[in-house]
Length: 435
Ligand SMILES: [Zn+2]
Image (tube, rainbow, N blue to C red; front, top):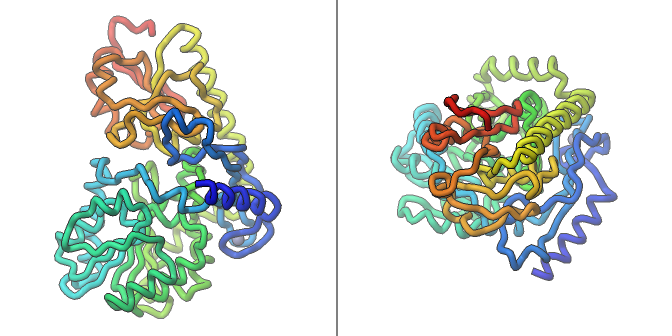
C-alpha cells in the first residue's frame, strides 16, 4: 500500500502541471468542472481506514482539438479495479439487457459455432454467459478485478485476470487466434492508455471483425445534467464526433450506433476496419447523429460552460430541499451507494447533517462505509425494519426498478427524492401528507 501511495502522489503532481489530451495529446484543454479533492468512488471502507483514506483531484476538461471530454487526473488503475464492488449480475435490468445484446450480435455478425468472441472487462460474465448460450465456439473474458472475474465458474468461458492491452491482445491471438467480435461494455471510459487499447483492439480484430462497445453517452450527460457520471473510474465522456476522430487514427470507423436506455443513457457503437464490408455499409444513423451533435455544439467550449452553470443550479435546489427537511426533523437515507452517489455527495457537500446513512442492494457492500463521506451502508432490509422518512435515490437512473422494489415503503408513507435530472419528491399520496 505504501509503495502504491507513492505512485499516486507522483501521478497527482504530474497531472497538476501537465494537462494534455489523452486522445490527441493536444493542449487546447478547457476546464469544465473542478470537483476538488475527492475520495475514490469504489473505495468503500471500514472505520479503521478512515484516517488513511486517499483523496485525489478530480477535474473534467474539454479538448477543443478532438472534442474529447475527459478527466485528466488519472489514478493508478491497480487501485481502482483490483477489488471491484460492482457485480453486474446483481442488477436485473442489466441481465436482461445483455441477453438481448448477445442474441443481436450473434444473429447480425457471427456464425456462432465457428466464432471467437473476446470481452474486455467481462465483470462477472453477465454478457459472456448469454453468448455461451448462443453456442459461440470460443469465449474469452478479460478483467483486472480478481474478486469479480473469479465468480465466473463456467467451463465454456476462458478468463484472463489482467488489464486488456497490446500484451494481453497478443497473448489471446497466440492462444486462440484473431477475434470475430470484441465487446467492451462500460469499460471504454475507464482506460488511461486509450490509444494503446484501441491499437490492441485493431490488431486483434479479424479483417472483417466487429468491435462493439457500450459506454455512457455524452449527449445524455449534457442534456440530463448527469454530472454524477464524473468520477475517477470514468475518464472519458464520448460523443460520436470525438470517437470518429479517435478511431480514424487506427484505421477503424464507426459504422453504426444504437442508443441504449440503460445507465440512464448509453450509446452502443459498432466499429470495424475502414476497408471492411461493414464500413462500406455504414448506417445513415451515424451521419445523422454526427450532424445532431454538431448542431448541439458538442464541438464548442461554450456548451460545456453552460452545462457547468446548470449543474450548480441543481446542487442549490437539492441542498435547500435536504436542509429544509432536516430542519423539520425528518430522517433521510441515501439509496444506491454507487460512484454516482459519491460524486453527488462530494460535489454538493452532503454530510451527516443532511442524510443519516446509506442503503444498497449489493450484499458485498453491507457493513462498509461510503468513500469520503463515511456513511454506513445497510442492506435494503432496513427499509422494512426501520424505514427513514425520505430516501434520496442516488441510483436515480434505476428509479422505476427501485420504486417497484420499494413499493411497500412507498405505500406505507415513505418518500423518495431524485437529485437528477430534476430535484423532485416522489410519494404515494395518503391522508397524512404533512411530511
Ligand atoms: Zn484531443
